[in-house]
Amino acid sequence: MKEILAVCPGSFDPVTIGHTDIIRRAAAMYDRLNVVVVFNSAKEPTFSPQERMEMLRKVTADLKNVTIDSYEGLLADYVRFHGAEVIVKGLRAMSDFEYEFQQALINKKLYSGAETTFLITNIENMYLSSSMVRTIAAMGGDISHFVPQEILGEIIAKFKKEGK
Image (cartoon, rainbow, N blue to C red; front, side, top):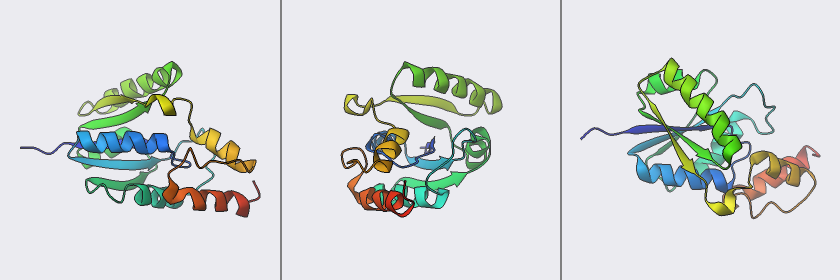
């Protein structure tokens, strides 16, 4: 039987419990899952691609079918190159859907060999975003309920080091 490779792209700046929930659910659905730190020209990242990849490796260490990667080009090109059949995107609200639906249509036009699957976030994570975590961390607030415990210390250290 043919294995299905799925790709779960994101900026993951930083990784939140919402991200890990989507990743874990996608890993259970597909034979192999590439979690890809992608470059978003509309965002100025706090963490380097290498830091984000390392955080993802820590929080997915127990998922044997998950590979962590990064890519700076078009997602459709990455998916085609790796032979993936599915793009997995997490959704929190209708505003996410509008943007992600447009992206799914563009990716389908650029590479028709993959379908986009949307996973709805668990209700307890609907409000959660990396930008909210960055804002709270920069002001010295408690982010322990929003990020995986395996990476909490390094996120806090990053903000203390940079005086954010």
